Image 1 (cartoon, rainbow, N blue to C red):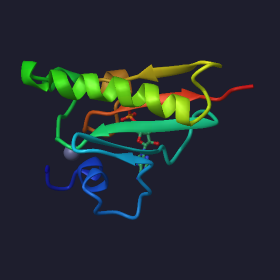
Image 2 (image 1 turned 30 degrees about the vertical axis):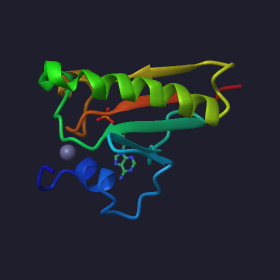
Image 3 (image 1 turned 180 degrees about the vertical axis):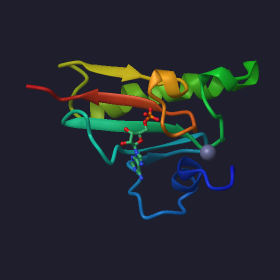
Image 4 (image 1 turned 60 degrees about the vertical axis):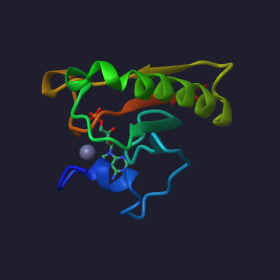
Length: 109
Ligand code: AMP
Ligand code: ZN
């Protein structure tokens, strides 16, 4: 855990944020400022600052993030209609929380 990191705290159950899914590797919760009717964040428990900081050994984490995104899309009812997955990288890429996370947005009419 990284001291003072919000997503470390959330992913380790240290806040009141409701976790929609949790396993050994990651958690999923709703974005507090949703950019779409469905806006979820898929967040590894391990503190990794951004895509730039990924190590080869982190491959299983990335695979898990995508497979859980697939499952959460289905559970949220957007799998068939379609959705978008994205990662913001560093300030210029729009990242404001420096703990790796995958956005899942969808549910537009
Ligand atoms: P990014 O710009 O990729 O770093 O995205 C960070 C996201 O975290 C933004 O969409 C915020 O709305 C969201 N966020 C910030 N604080 C919280 C929180 N306490 N609970 C849920 N989502 C949050
Ligand atoms: Zn962190």
